[in-house]
Length: 141
Image (tube, rainbow, N blue to C red):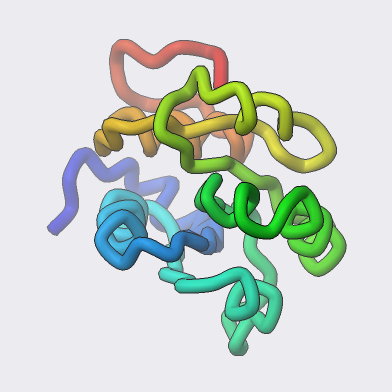
């Protein structure tokens, strides 16, 4: 099902890895993004680093829980493996102090819960350097 799809974005076909250990959150994020992007569900940091023939991502949505459990090395490993890929952290809130402390060096923003199609797509568009196409967007990540 295509919800509010911008045709030029689906043709552009940016590759996104959704790296989240929670199967439901991972599937929801992939569903929100798959119409305008090549979105892949990735269940673990190891699977992301392996790539499994998916190619290099333009953007990685990474569970903040992975950073809590593995430390900043998780982000460093992803940046080393995918130097051109930007990272958005998925946290309980956009104001999460730990997530915001990770900003810089490839981590370009934080997606907070509750996850909405409009909010997730807006953050992804901004992280990819796109101008969001829907009304009500804010210019900040």
